[in-house]
Image 1: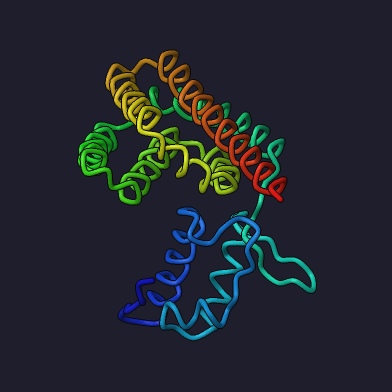
Image 2: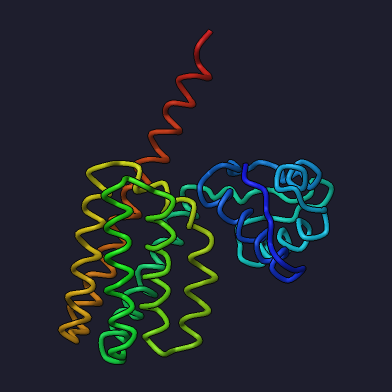
Length: 231
């Protein structure tokens, strides 16, 4: 695990937060696992103070649960939780895309094109970590372009619950390719300033993610049941 070498205290706390967030989103800290402050501090070469602050922020974002007598636990959603959360995100992203198509500035559209180009380069390298970070920036930029602060806050809060699952959904090569194609369709719809088309694409994009994640979780549950049943 990479250590953190920021230039000042504020950067240290932010870098620690982002490092822990990446570990959770990328599944390097498994759902249901306890976050051990001492071990994390040692692995990131920081004191326990920024670790504690990062954990509090992660709990506020919905990536960590603070449980009495157990401490901080990486959030573990039930299948029902996952489906419900994706359904909410689909509507939020659909509305966000619709508003963005009406309100996006030329500058924001240019930034989206640049991010899309970078994301495609990450896809070509099969660099899932880089791809996902750029993907998330694109979704947040579209959300910001909607110019609705309440919607933006809701999206950030709800999406945090399923970021790790959205990350994992791209590990299937065919599904990943489909997601890339959908992102190009989003950009085309925004360029055309077509809110109806943009809303449809965004909703379908999230629903496709949901279906991939549900299939993945069911498959993992079946594998676990088989392993448990072995003598």
